[in-house]
Length: 263
Image 1 (spheres, rainbow, N blue to C red):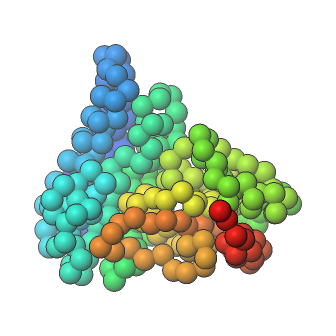
Image 2: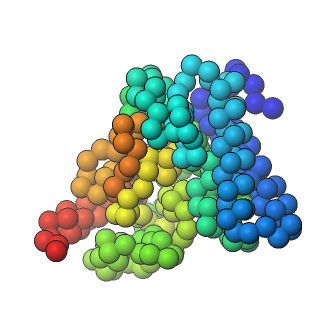
């Protein structure tokens, strides 16, 4: 059981791990019962959300919460978080599609603490793999990219910016599911850059960005501007996470791509 004397870094880890273990149990049990894909997604989302918000209410009662599955005060439309000093931004189940397709492993749980718009503590659990990546202790900086950098894309809808970046870098594409799994692949040296231009929400990237930055990776908007969290509108149009060894060429390629006229 998590106790109230854990620090924020440890709490983020323990919450992500506990929610992940619950999700594995829910997926195994409901899959055996033959529920529909929609029922499996909904059950996982709700179970993990309820666990995380209950734990935070008990252990950090003065902190605000922003959750993908929240409603009211802890949902996207809640306003109390905007004046709160500390806000936990959580994605109870990142990658519902992958979660609902056993035995896929590229889904995650995100838990992050934001202070002043900056994610200070973060954890990304990869429950099907039994791993939790954290901002503290930080993951080691992965080795420098190979001659052909590996660019992560969605397996179902690779964005034009990712295809362009891979071609310009002379790289290769790596397909993965959830946002957390994508950033984790860069953190763990299984890929080198993850560009996204299709729009996400703050809970999709907050914890992964905390983990990536702590590991020494570069994480910004596509135009190089800072990523800021706990905004009135939690929609986040784009981001890029890259190994520092290729951050400059990635920045130059993206700047040129953003300057190109589009109809």
